Each structure stands twice: as structure tokens, then as C-alpha cells.
Image (tube, rainbow, N blue to C red; front, side, top):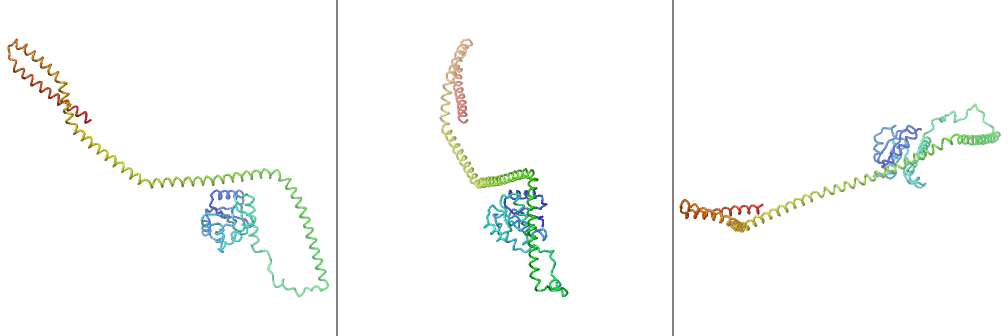
Length: 354
């Protein structure tokens, strides 16, 4: 029986791809399907019709949920799937583990990581076992005529039976010994010729096989490491993001409280500025008036003095009375001083406001 369909059940993506690649490299025209867990493997079997079941299931031992032993028992308990051969893929070894795997229904074990030779040996073991389990169709059924001696046949005499039996046994032993000798000579000759013919070819193939297996193992380990790093990084980022999202309401509350505090401080400062201006306004006006008087009085006095001199000169020429003019000059001086004082007060107040 040739293996045509294989199912690989393993939770490790790199392990699934590595085993599939090695199976395809054997060039046995095998259809390989993958399952990420034991539950998924059972679901795939349930979805298939009889005649489309895999010939072999390479089952990983340790998987999340249902493990490999539990899945093997479930498969063997189903009459439709009981003929499927199951090989346990595990890093464990030894006769004790093999016996335990067989007790659960597995046919054998395959080490992880495995070589192409180990995979081929497992397939040959499955082929041999399934061939032994099939009934022999070539055996001719016994009939009544074959079971009972013919009446026409003469029964051997009692005296001749022991000698014939002894001769037949001796002939059979000689034939077996001769066959063994010929087979031994043929095997030795064949081995010698094969070594001389295949040595130049086998060594490069062995080196290439070792190289491919090493690269495959390194790639498998790298893929597992990358998966672990990506998973841990993704989990860490999600945790930080969830923490930040959880802290958003607290940040919004802090911002609102800060805004309210700033608004209160601005309102209080505005009130204080207004109160200070109201308190300072009389003093500002008083200072402005005094400053205006000090600045303007000399100027007004000088102007008034010049006007009086001019009026005396004019009065001498035109003989006018200067009393009314002098009174007008004094009034003008007062008005000018008051106006300038008011202007300076307004300017100083505006400066304080700004």
C-alpha cells in the first residue's frame, strides 16, 4: 500500500511547515494537510467522506486543549477512523514512552526534529504494518474435496510413512541451507558492488542532506523565536495601549480641574487689578495735577509776563487802559493750567490701565 494522504497536527507553525517540506522532498506524491490543534484534526476527519481519510496522522503530543494521546484515543474509538495509522511526533524517546504511545493507539513515534530518513522509516513501518493487517486474498479456500482424501487414492502403508517423512525433512533442510548460502553470497557481492558504485554519489548526497537538515532546523528555530518575540511584543503593546485607554478619563478630569483653577486665578487677578486701579485713581489724579502745575506754571507765568509787557508798550502808543486786559490774562492762565492738568491725568491713567 502506498501512502497518498497525510495529516500533520501540530500547534507549532514552523514544525508543521518543516515536516511538510520534508515529506514533499521524498517525491512520493503525498497530499499533505495541516491542522493547528487536535480539535481541528478531528473536525477535518468529520468533514471527510469514507475513502478520503488520511493514511497517516503525524500527531504532536503537547498541544493546547486536547493533547495528542487524547486525540489518538478518540480517533481509534471511531470505527470509521480506526484503520488510520498515527505516529506521535515528540522530543521524548525511549521504550517506555513508545509503549505508552502504543497503549493509546499510536503505531510509533517520530523524534522532533526529524530527519528525512526517520520520516521514510516511519512511512515504511506504516506500509508494512497495514500490509500485515490486510487479509490474504491469494490464499485458496479449502473445499470438501481438498479436505477429504479421494477414495481412489491409495493410502500409504504404515511401514513406508516414517521413511518418506524423514527423507522429505532432510531434503527440505538441504534446500534451505543451499538457499541461505546462495543468498549470503549474493548479498556480499551486491553490497560490494553497491559500495563501489554509490560511494562517489552517496557522499555528496549525504553532505547535501546534512546541510539541508541543518538549515531546516535553524530556520525552524528562528521561526519559533520570531513568533515568540512577535507574540510578546504584540502583547506588551496591547497592554500599554489598554492602560493608556483606561487612564484617559483620569487625564480628562485633571485637565478640567486645571482649566477651572486657571479660570479662578484669572478672575481673582482681574478683581485685584480693578480694586488696585480704583484705589489708585485719586492718587493718580492728584499726582497728575501737581505734575501739570509744576510743568505748566512757569510757562504760563512767562507768557503772562510777556503779554503784560506787550500791553504796556501798546498802551503807551494807543493810550488804552490795561486793567481789563490784565484780568483776561490771569483768567487765561488759570484755564490753561486746568486744561493741561486734566490732559496729563488722562494720559497717566491710560498708562496705568495698559
